[in-house]
Length: 202
Image 1 (tube, rainbow, N blue to C red):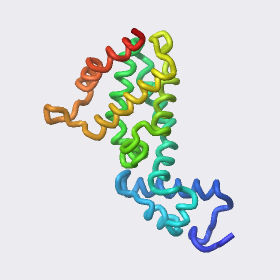
Image 2 (cartoon, one colour; image 1 turned 30 degrees about the vertical axis):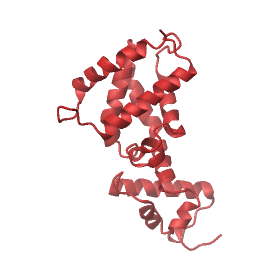
Image 3 (spheres, rainbow, N blue to C red; image 1 turned 45 degrees about the vertical axis):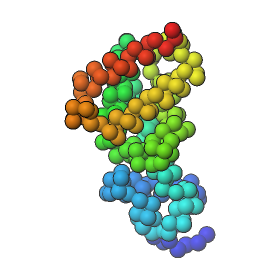
């Protein structure tokens, strides 16, 4: 094994190398912010070349999506906790979406998804993003089958959720000239999203 690079302490195997790259990316995002950190920053942090990072991640997009995935499980749990008090599926979905729209831009690692091409910009319905949405719906207490949803319709709901989050998180300013937050955001979502959630089976 070559011993140059990695600040003189090369990883024992590929698994350790990937984890050290992710750890370095975490430090770079902490220091530079979700929009400022780059693959070059990560390579410098590790004391390796960009080509070394490319051995484990195809590019900056893949690296930062992987970092966001590490944060996703905990964030999904927080969304589900916000939805659980509501028996009405409309209210539960509204709360989950409102919380996500308000939180994603401030969640340092999940905000990485807003800067990458495949996950939230060029391909909002990428496998990664759709998997997040499916996992979220699976963890709720909502009886989707009773509401008339089969697997294909649930995927449609996930797609709609992701597109709504993309739009409202990236462009939060309403026609009033300010962002909707709190009760105003929830009232807006309930008015337009609520009927669609419960009328799916009809």
